[in-house]
Image (cartoon, rainbow, N blue to C red; front, side, top):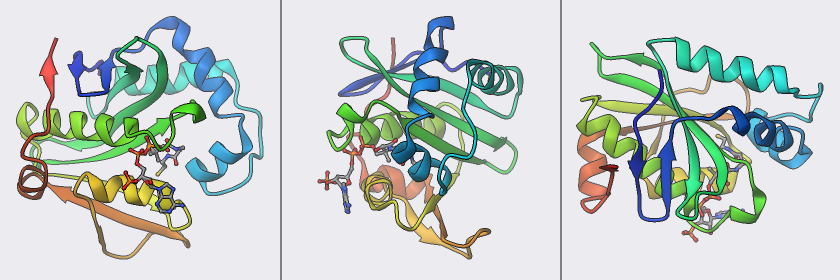
Length: 182
Ligand SMILES: CC(C)(COP(=O)(O)OP(=O)(O)OC[C@H]1O[C@@H](n2cnc3c(N)ncnc32)[C@H](O)[C@@H]1OP(=O)(O)O)[C@@H](O)C(=O)NCCC(=O)NCCS
């Protein structure tokens, strides 16, 4: 599904546009980013058709919602999605890629996730959002912890960590989290 426009403090989340795919192609051919995102060195060239397929799959399904992450100056710096949504159980999983490295460590990822979670817990009435992250990805783990995620359970793949945040914990940890429909 296509997500609604959401506004955070530093970012907007907006529907993807046709021109966005080429940036994702650039991001997912960067070896450092690929390692952090997939856990291994790049083994194949990520092509425009892959980005288009990724978008179409998420937008066509009823179990996923995808957004572009853009700065307040409308620069597209990454993508974020909810997937494996189970509205009855109140569960979903989150994936984020801030692909433009110039924007790492500046709070954009944290703001994008908080904005998404506010929407997920308020408008979608989800109860819990989970994710998987590689243990060596300290920046991502710190970012997720700032959003209220904690480590849980056993990782399905070696080196991976499972994290989750409940609606209750999110609003206790982030009473001022902002997500405004624009
Ligand atoms: C992971 C990602 C979403 C985080 O977004 P971001 O905007 O860079 O992160 P933020 O600035 O919001 O927060 C990062 C935090 O990690 C900290 N950090 C950075 N490197 C760190 C390290 N090596 N060890 C510990 N903390 C670290 C930062 O200081 C910051 O914490 P602080 O605000 O307390 O100082 C983004 O960097 C990204 O998409 N990276 C590439 C792909 C990726 O890793 N995706 C996640 C896959 S699970």
